[in-house]
Amino acid sequence: MTQNCLELRGVGKSYGSFALRDVDLSVPKGCIMGLVGQNGAGKTTLLKLILNLIARDSGEISVLGMDNRKEEMAIKQRLGVVMDESAFHDFLTPQKVSNIMAGIYPNWDEGQFAGYLQRFGLRPGDLIKNFSRGMKAKLSIAAALSHAPQLLLLDEPTSGLDPVVRDEILDIFAEFIGDGEHSILISSHITSDLERVADYIALLDGGQLIFCEEKDALLYGYSVLKGTREQLERLDRSELIGLRETSFGFDALVERSEENRRRFEGLVFDRCTLEEMVLYFIRGKKR
Ligand SMILES: Nc1ncnc2c1ncn2[C@@H]1O[C@H](COP(=O)(O)OP(=O)(O)OP(=O)(O)O)[C@@H](O)[C@H]1O
Image (cartoon, rainbow, N blue to C red; front, side):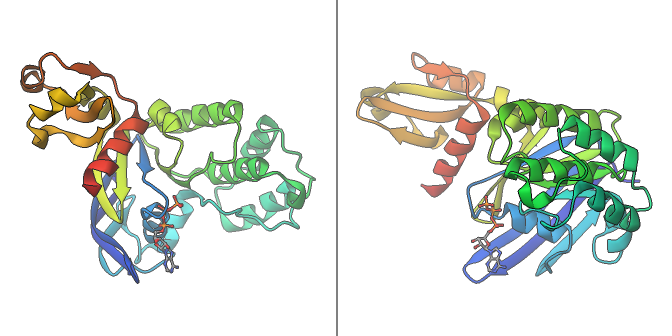
């Protein structure tokens, strides 16, 4: 059995002027991979391709060691999914959702679902119509987790949630992968959430995978370099990623290496957040 729960090879899909091109991506078992990128970068398209909700133009996709087209039904039993739009009809209640899910998933765990509802402060008998965006998001996450899935595919699951609930949900995600057998691919614009829980980060931009790296390797492998305009004039710019010039000076991302320490001696090296790093890489690509 493969150690990757998800593998994409040469995956492509085009929609008029937008194209997801030649994406190779592997999600190892037992980890959380964060998928980041600007609006329209192709994150939802990628997740829909994995779910076989849309047909790919090229490439291969294997989910939990199975071909995502040939074994779609078997895969869906073992996947927990949250897409960004509300998953359940407004006239339902969480209790009715539970009854419906029990008919779809042989592994549906009513008790576990009820436990999540209680944890999230959702009443089983209330109409979803009257739920806030955050409450709908919590319901979707509770449902995705309650049929013993091995892999969660989550499209911006925490976007409508307040920081306290987000924190609790991130803890639940960390618990979920704790035994090394479960994994999560999560797209999010909240990079601080990913900085907290993700093991790997994949950046999409304009349909292209810019990188897929271990989060710690990214955070410890790069620094922000800062200096004056005069200092910039004397530098070899080929090492600078996403250079930004201001009236005072410049900043750019550089690889953290002894060679660069010597090359840029006398300049300031700062730590970099994941959010800053993503901005530098996107800016660097647009140059
Ligand atoms: N059904 C469709 N028909 C035509 N174009 C589409 C369709 N679905 C998506 N697109 C286009 O594909 C591109 C990528 O969209 P996608 O929803 O994958 O981006 P995203 O990274 O998820 O964005 P966001 O962060 O805003 O959710 C966009 O240019 C979008 O307009």
